[in-house]
Image (cartoon, rainbow, N blue to C red; front, side, top):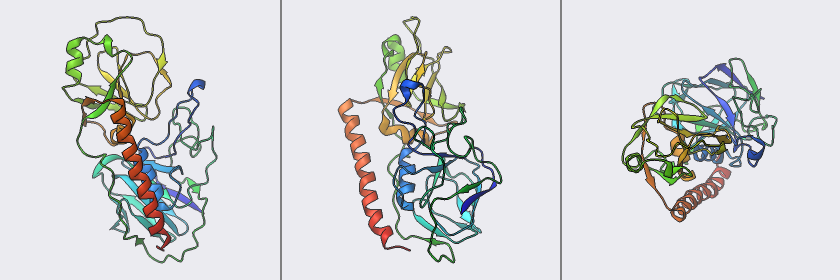
Amino acid sequence: MFMKIQRAGLLDSFQDAGRIGLAELGVGQGGWMDSLSAALANILAGNDREEAVLEMHFPAAQLSFQAPVSIALSGADFDAAIDGVALPLNRRINLPAGSEIVFRKKINGQRCYLAIEGGWDLPPVLNSVSTLLKSGLGGWQGRALKKHDKVPLKFKNTLLIEQVKVSPFFVAPYMWYRAAPFHVFPGPEWDWLSAETQKQIMETAYTITPSNDRMGYRLAGAPLEMVCNKEMKSSGVLPGTLQRLPNGQPLVLTADAQTTGGYPRVLQIAAVDLSRLAQLGTGDSLWFSFIEMDKAVQLMESQQQWLQQTEVGMRFQISGYS
């Protein structure tokens, strides 16, 4: 059993939680950009949260399935359809053999996640099947999917599915699409900025430029003026680290970020906001607000509690749905 790529998308790759604990070896974590949407898709498909999903950008691939499958879509809305019939987000969907999914237009968001019950049969590399595109590791042959690829599935669906069937159970996504400041902490080199710049960066919006990918988003806005011109040694960075580039503009690192960098780290976006960041793209704006650590932990706990409650509820509902 396999999934076939009838037409390649812009940049479709398999991602899971990434390669955790290897930063000291220079291996970045990588993995899905929007962990909440990926987890939700897996829950709806009947998988563990950590199962690999297909992360898609628009235009996304055209996919076909040789055998009956149960799937779920979450994250960005790319107007998925089969034979002209729209497929909803955030629901479990049973598909008969021969089903072919197309993504017709981008309605909102930047990354759509497809989970399939049981997942894909992919060999792990360094304890993860995530695709690290820059290094050619993991996923399907270490690269984005191409036309005619046939990716094997791990699970054989024994359901007799004769037509598309959408579960009546719907999960409203967490509030990651709402317009709100991104919660930040001062970075290690925050004090290298002038007092005027420190005030300005917290009061004005920055725009994501076309130079954005899974490694980072270059931002455009008022330049970040420095009062310190020290030589900086390469130091640890994380997804969400906001660095000041030599031209004075900010760069915020994302999932495929390197493990060290030599640019001043002026802010760090709280982990609770990284899924929302993942759904922004060229031309979108972001602005910042300081948060205390205990409040950031509280928000993360609330987010994870929502996910856990969703998982428990959907396990019960899915067990009675066929």
